[in-house]
Length: 218
Image (tube, rainbow, N blue to C red; front, side, top):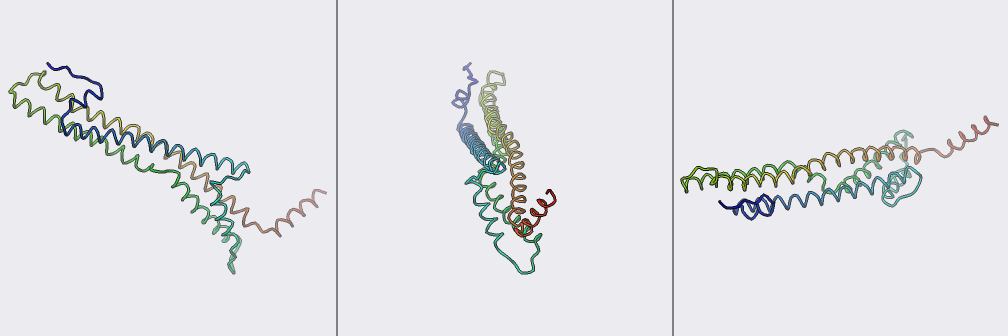
């Protein structure tokens, strides 16, 4: 009986043409999955640090376009517009800019969902094809012993293993990173609302309030 290697490379070399094509496709998907995870982690870290610096009062070039967008919108005066309506307009504008920045930082995060859902089925296709080949071999040799069936089934199941190796990290990465980006997005929305209040505050009213508070303290 021919020796069967359970190493990934050994199973690949022992597989048929269709099995090898499926395995190569799944290896490429796995590599792409890890590249997407690293890209999303890098974007998440950069944006989180920028938001933390902004909350601490430090300027950050990454959030500068959002700040500039809000300041530009706050300078626009519309006749008959109340302070509340102006503040809402500035908030909406900054929120839109924040969402664009968040989408850019996410990179190809959505592709992780595609990899996690499609890879198992691609691996299953390779498994089914390999098992079909095993049955064809049984028919050709007219021998149903386990020694005849086992090599083909092992090669077939290897495709499923390759599919799971690509799907599991993709599913974990998508769920964990998606939740982290969701929290970060909420932080950006809160930051936009706070900045809108500051940008639309009437300086005259603010100075009068400050003077009144000083007088009461005296």
